[in-house]
Image 1: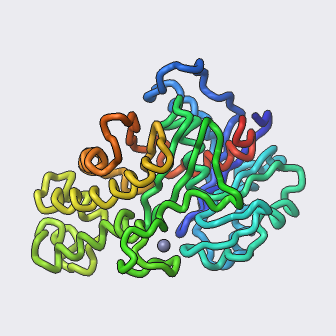
Image 2: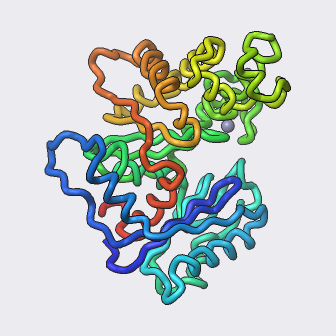
Length: 338
Ligand SMILES: [Zn+2]
């Protein structure tokens, strides 16, 4: 672990969120001890975020790098930090070059790590996928503390993913692993920003929930949801469905059950492939809480192979919107083996 200040930066589709982390040892846990369900480790990481900075995300790649330098200076005005981690939605190769990003096309081809090294010559750098970083944070200090085999699934505009196997980060041969959202579950399905058809994220992300809500509203099957969107069916988004479901609206609960089935379908495929102990669900959709988690766990048990033999837990993320920034900082500070 680093002994000086550490900065983690999460480049989102709309905002750049940066945190400064205090030097922090990992929470004590003896091998074989039951997973930590909360309490001390969550308090420790919350306390470890000493300061935060935000900026809107520019469209242009050079501007994004300039904003990163700004937030780092905001958080460490006296001297450059010991380590800086950057999480980006997309495929970042081993050289720290952004190779593919359906949601931030302005960054494609950008040598992010090289450009940061010029402005931060004394800092240790990590540049990688945002959901991978979020998964590492949840594994170290969040919902999956104590579990060595963890999948992170972030539910936002799309679906991101991260893999921890045997206690180590698994990024794949070229660091392109964890693109769970682009598993094709219907080859004739709707077009995805990645260029393929019927990707899982078209059905099981926040955008997918909004689509189910709009279809129900247009078919006059969800008046409570429609009212929350101001009476315009085309304005229905995922959060209108979750708000109505949390208020007990039966139509919204029905939409959530259908949505949960699509989400659980992909989770069951992932569990069959990876055999994780914990699947952590993160992203804005998780604020829906039990109205989402309950139906997801039920549908998952119906869809996964040999459910009676498996001990996989599906848990909500606990580090919230800061998970990607925290994980990026941790990876820069200590590496995946720390
Ligand atoms: Zn796709």
